[in-house]
Image (cartoon, rainbow, N blue to C red; front, top):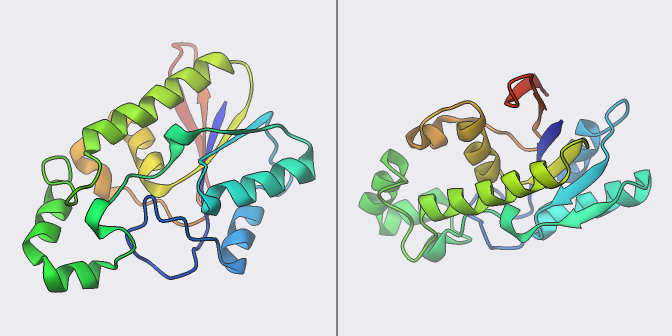
Length: 190
């Protein structure tokens, strides 16, 4: 089984932050605590190295005595020149580039940012390795909205072009289990 948990609310408000390492707000911590309160349990916590994920993952690991693994491939998409900026700020200086990105992020990545296909390859490589290595364990992946959207496209057989249409709120928890055909099937969404 595998559970995906998006980090909670981040200090500094909504903005493009892939590699920008802003911390969670107190409310963000609470969103994640609510998503993982008993009866939820897992065998291994695997986290992005970024503070907004790793700080909570470390807290959860310590409080539950569940081992923690930091996995760098589960970090968010690098937004390049747009890092740390709001959509409004980008629109004021680069409205066409932002519109193209929203319309087709695969063809029009942020300037100097990570290409969507490279991001997808990195995330799926980590997911495949982790789910094979820890096949019989319940894994909790503490990660980012973009990473979860990539995994949802893969697990639901959705085209990558629909990635920005998938809603994954702060503190969202989604659980999948393997079926008899060795495919992951969604069990719940919190």
